[in-house]
Image (cartoon, rainbow, N blue to C red):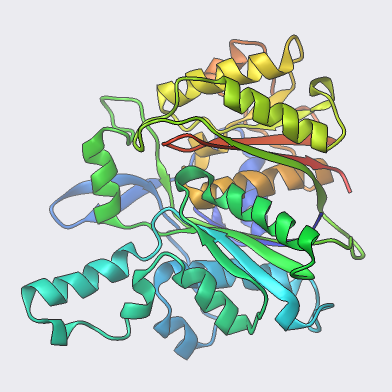
Length: 376
C-alpha cells in the first residue's frame, strides 16, 4: 500500500512542513504547558498557535470541537496534495482514526451541566462530540467521504492501528483510498488523571508527555504520480498486561517486528531506521531495548524516539509513522539522536536517507504493533 499524501498538526506547528523543520533541529523538544484551573500547567505538548482560519469555513469550525478541527485541518492538507479533483469517487474513500482522548472536553461540559444544573441544560451542540469517534465521523461528513469509517481507542497504538486497518480495508477492496489518522486533544482533566497515576513527567520523576495534535496519511493501492512511501509490512500481537501497565514480556514485540519485516520481504539487517516507541517511562524503554536487541541481533540501525520529543498518544503513533515515511522518501532526515537506552546499546543517529524504516508500538494493556515503510 502506498502513502499518497499526508498532513499534520503537531506541537511543532500546523502543516507537515513544521514537523519536518522540527525534525531538522537536533535540540528540539516541544514546549509544554497545558493550563488547569486550580494549579500550575500540566506536561502536555499543545498546539499553541493552531487555528483553522483560512482552512475551514468559520461556521464549520465553530460547530466542531477541538480534536475534530485538528483532524479536519490535517486531513485537508493531505487531500489538497491530490489536487482539486480527487482521483477516486468520494463514496469510495474511507477514514480510520485512532484516538486516546477525543471527546473528553465535550463530555465534561455536558456532564457539568447535567450534574450541576439539570439534564435540560446540557448543551445539545456538544453532545455529538462526546464520543471518541466524533472526529472521524465529522471528517467523513465534512468531506463527504462514504467509505468505511472506523475509530480505534487503543491508547498509544491507536494511530498505528488506524494505519494497519486502512491497509486491510484497501486489500479487501472495501475502499479505493483511506485517510488513516490519529487525533488527540489537550484536555486538562484527562492529563490530571495521568499525573495522579504517576505516569507524566515532572521535575521529580521520569515519565511521559502527552501530545495534542492530528496526523493524516492518505493510503491507496495505486501509487499515483509521486507517492511518499510504501507501507510494505505490518503485524500485531497481544501481550496481556493490566490496563495501566506495560507488559514485562518483550517476546511478542520481537515476534511482531519479525513478522512485519517478513511481510515486507526484508530481514533485520536490512532495516535502516527504527522509529521507536519509548516515551520517557523507564519500563517502556526497558521493554523496547529487550525487544529490539532480540530482533536485530548484532545489527544496530539508526534510531529516533519522537514520543520523547513531541509527546505520546494515538496522534503520536500516527506521527511516528509519518516520520518513518518521510525518512524513507528523503523528505526528512531526523537530526534527533537515539534515546539514551538505545544509544548505550549501540544504536546510532540517522546519518542520511533511510531506505527502510521500522515503527514499533506497545500500549498499556499489551497491544503491540509494528509497521515497515520502504522507499516508493
